[in-house]
Amino acid sequence: MRDAVKLGLGTAQFGLDYGVSNREGMTSEDEARRVLQLASGHGVKVIDTARAYGRSQEVLGRCLPAGHGFDIVTKTAPLRTASISRAQIAGVAVQFEESLALLRQERVYGLLVHHAGDVLAAGGEGVVDALRALQGRGLARKIGVSVYDARELDGVLARWTPDIVQLPLSVLDQRLIASGHVAQLARLGVEIHVRSVFLQGLLLMAPEAIPAPLQGAARSVAEFQAFAAAGGCSPASAALQFGAALPGVRAVLAGVNNAAQLDELLDYGSCAVDAAAGLDGAAMARFALADEALLNPAQWRLQ
Image (cartoon, rainbow, N blue to C red):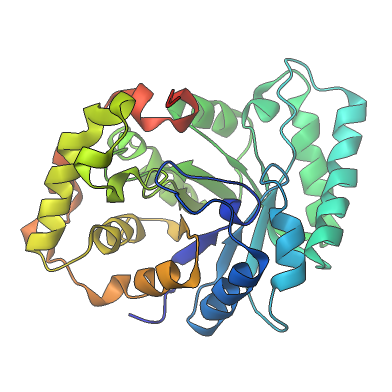
């Protein structure tokens, strides 16, 4: 399917040397421009970036095609403090306007709190109020939060119902499906953006090439890749289909290093793995892992 309605483009690679399977380093500006042109021409809508992604916003500002029609989502700078001060709250708006300048946009589709702990900290309601004020000024159509786990999501929902929640989810990491949180967000009408669908490329690696500290995932990776091949799909296509089929999911974010990789992903919907063959949630649970040391890249120790 060349009209990639639910495929969203992650852009950490535009500003950082990012991804466990990335052997090419940071994407060049010329290649980023080619990626964006291809995405624009084939129905990709959501572009995800952040202040924390190095030069990503700056590169996007220079490379976005004229009249692109993308829904751009960016994020606040993580504060990561136990208590949020008035000065930090004021800085949210200042930094966001800097992001708009770098992106060369008058407004964005979405503005997310990058570190959910900033909402949960003492004074965190001020961060939410700052986002609401920016939304009220018409600078962000929707506001929301990026979370890592169920604990963070529960804490956020106890205080606020965001317009958008970005969360980690993949064939390997189905914790928020099993816990009922994905279904809960769908019931609340929250727009879900799935990230880490390939778990930084781990799901697509040859099992024998997976770094030693992550070899605990190798069996599930091998079994999933064999399942996808039996259905006539690439692992990437099957993984994208799995995420896109979940209730409430607006975008499944995938980062690429070059236009050739995006071109492969654009065909994800043309490879229809029959649900009867195992793409339904109950059957896909067989590939899920529970070890957070494997599922949370922040805990990876690869050096």
